[in-house]
Image (cartoon, rainbow, N blue to C red):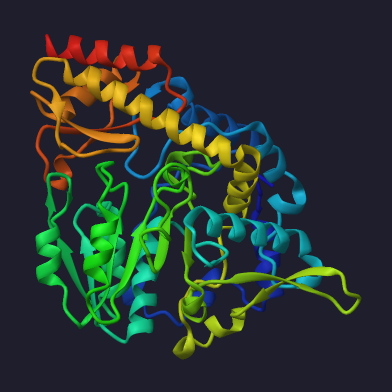
Amino acid sequence: MPFISNTDADRKQMLAEIGVSAFEELVSNIPKKFRENLKLNMEEPYSEFEIAKKMYKLSGKNIPTHKANSFLGGGIYDHFIPAVVDHVTSRPEFYTAYTPYQAEVSQGSLQYIYEYQTMIAELTGMDISNAGMYDGASAAAEAILMAVRKTKKYKAIVAGTINPVYVEVINAYTKSQGIEIILIPSQNGVIDIEELKLSLDDETACVLVQTPNFFGNIENMFEVEKITHSAKKAMLIAVVDPISLAILNSPAEYNADIVVGEGQVLGNSQYFGGPLFGFMATKMGFARTIPGRVVGETVDVDGKKAYTLTLQAREQHIRRAKATSNICSNQALVTLAATVYMVAMGKEGLKDVAKLSTAKAHYLADEISKLDGFSLAFDQPFFKEFVIKLPVPASEIIEKLLEKNIFAGIDLKPFGYENMLMIAITEKKSKEDMDEFVKALSEVNNG
């Protein structure tokens, strides 16, 4: 229900039902010094018609990517979503469901989670996947906690080329756990291998590297793996774009121990920044330490195929002292979208998306580099995202191109990179879209 109108009489009746005469009695145990006494600057109440009209007017100020020429990325991307994805996810048995605790009434949800896990395992080359995480950033943090539990070591090395937002979440997850986070600087847009060698020791629980990394560059994971596993018990955590795995080496090929990433690219819209979902897969030997839930396939008493939550019961995560994680659910609806997307696209479809995104990104990078004062910031192989050095501050480019209804990309100044713009391309971009962007950059640069 989009609108719930509670009258004073309704509120009075609800308070009476729970045995109090006023709302203040419900918060009487909270000391007054902790209560906010400022008046809320709220408008007068609206009717359903009035509030709907106001909200539609406000939402009309948003500019979705189908109404603009967007080159935004940084972790959330504008890939094509087949119509079948929304058709399936909007079915009421999925759309209104909470979470499949009761196996006897949730076989459909449990089955699609099982299929989702299977496809994530196939994409990554890992043995087992969980039912999903909250987002890519929390999945990366949970992977570090998982490595610490497994190795009993409390030092984690993180590549400085990872998404900076992920670093913030990792710090939030680990700072109270006694885990030391070592951030390895970047060199020419990839991890500094020599610094990694110097930082690694036998007290290291894990090395976490993102590829393609925050800048879109592809890391040498085979070299990183060799260094990581030279330390006693150290585990390699790979943060990956699942679309890239259709054409790049799978994490299993470079012997990653844990694989995580952001799954938004698999059939989910950008949603103005969320909701998102993270994925996690690992080797079978680490199955007992994986956070979240895992759905398994079995047979019932009649010998019929059945699906059930396995390995870890939800109740384990309520007993905090013994919990492997505080996640006891999963992003069910968005992982369902990912499942439908992967089934609809198939292996060849995912390859096409990856190849088109890569080819178009390289075309655009080449065209922009031909402009006076513009050049690629890094001499590295990249996937669908790249960084351009600019002759002027990126904020100026972004602001001026907004006037032309173009989202130019992400200004990297807040992350310590002056006059640099990060640009993302997906299979949706036509040659006309990209040429329009190049033309607009040229016009802005020439005054």
